[in-house]
Amino acid sequence: MKVAMLIGLLCLVITPSIALGQPIFYSLDSLLVYATGKSKSIQSGMLRFDQAKQAKLAAIAGIPDLSGGASFSYTNNTRLPVNLFPAEIFGGEKGTFREVQSGIQYVSNGNMYVDLKLFNLAAWENLRLSKLNIETTQSDNRITLKNLQSNIASSYFNIVNLQEQLKAARQNAMVADTLFQIATQKYQQGIGKPQDVNETKSNYLNSQETARQVEFLIRQQYNVLKILCDIPDQDSILIGQFINDVEAQQMPQVVHNRLEVFNSLMKEKMAWSSYRQARFALLPTVSLFWSNTSQQFNTRSTLFDQDVRWIPSSFLGVKLNWNIPSAQAVAQISKTRYDHSLAKLNTEHLQSKMEIEAKQLSNDYLKAVSQTQTYREIFRLKRDTYTKNLGLYDAGLIGLDQVMNNYNALINSHYSLISSTISVLLAEANIALNNNPK
Image 1: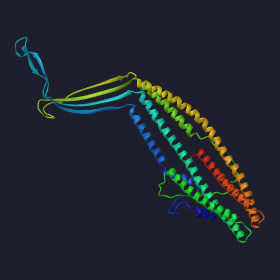
Image 2 (image 1 turned 90 degrees about the horizontal axis):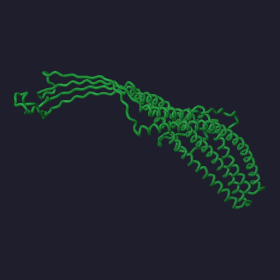
Image 3 (image 1 turned 30 degrees about the horizontal axis):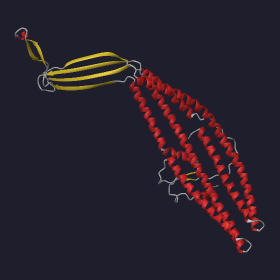
């Protein structure tokens, strides 16, 4: 087993020589652990989760919706207002008026005020909405992780498949070379045709080119895998898993994966909460308010005059605020009601989808196992036929055309066996990720 794995690794021509410390993954699970620590989409999900928690704190603070402030002003009334007073007050003639300036030229004013909500149903609903948002964000992150892992699994087994095909292509090239050597020897002995030499040589060159094309595909798939795992281009990784024959085993149990259904239920609850919040926003709010003011009136241009006292004043009260519903508010209520109806329909759709996907996973596994068992037997038969007919051709008992047909059938059956075997492994991985995302 170890010798076969070592030979397989030496056969890979994917990247330059393996650098010291280059990660080599012998199983999908080890790659998933590695990718989870590097994935930017997972890191983005954690940031969204932190943001949702901060939004909950803001919603808690929004229930009392405490507001207030403090201010200070210093005013220089450069031109005081003039009022008319009866002149007789000042000893003047009755019926006449005298101009008198009123007010104080310099005024210092300090003010503090506080407003505290006592009754605010919309804010309480907003707190409930923020809690639902935290659960929904967690659910979104789990779905993102599951989808990412499913995509990584597909790319991972594509690479395993291609690496197995590369091994087979190189083996096929050796077989094609053997056939070419036999045809050449027969021609040199005068018992073969030059057309046979040409055909076997073309077949040999084609098999070599097939191996090179598979190498290009492997490099391509590694690039896809790097994108999925957010691995920098300068970093190199290697998939070291190789396959053996997959024997029939008991069908893995497939459970219903409720991630998407739960996520939709959370969004349905959020839509209902948004509808309630929009309705509650039309209800009145009750606030407790308080204000305290101190003023100083100066006749001198002094910011703080020690010879003049500060005159305080304050008030405390309860305020009822009830806004007239606007067209925008009514439209928002209508929109949130329809959003909830759509979310409810989506939940019902995902419930049906969940049940069908579970059956599909079972069907994919059984299909792949059945193909593997059939293709294994076909490959054994094609190999036996080719081996026997190659001996007959070497003995001059049959023509090259029949051997070439046997050769092509052998190659096709070998590739079919490899692909079906990988399909079994991928189906098992998809079932495992469905049952319990890593």
